[in-house]
Image 1: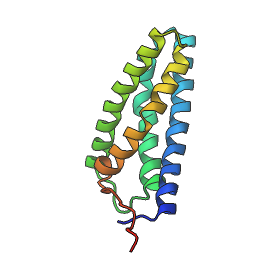
Image 2: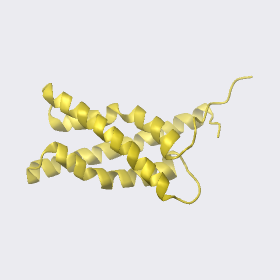
Image 3: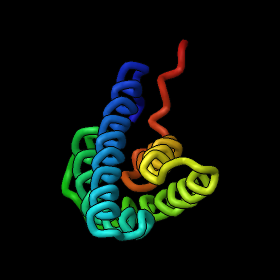
Image 4: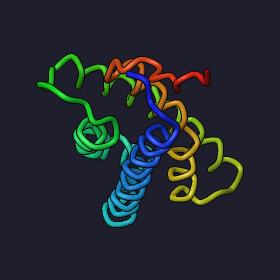
Length: 139
């Protein structure tokens, strides 16, 4: 499917909205688990993974990428595979930022923000198999 520039911008904006809401929710849950229960922020981040990403999958599938048709388990598994890869990258970035002196709650949020472009491209191409969705050529 070829996307126009406004369609692509809309898709990216929807994806970023879901991502930012997910990152904010994850951060709040992580802080809650860490501050209230005394759990490591890294373990707290892992604990939020399944729930927040399931909601993100449903929102990205139906709203961000407007994927039609029946949902397949393979699609969900591909989505979680990408989420696991980017979780690892985000946690590594977070650990590095904490090591540099940033508070963990800022580091976790920034880690999620920094992996957003990778998430968008990987979910578009791999999770939902939408291809590049190239913009129409001029001429």
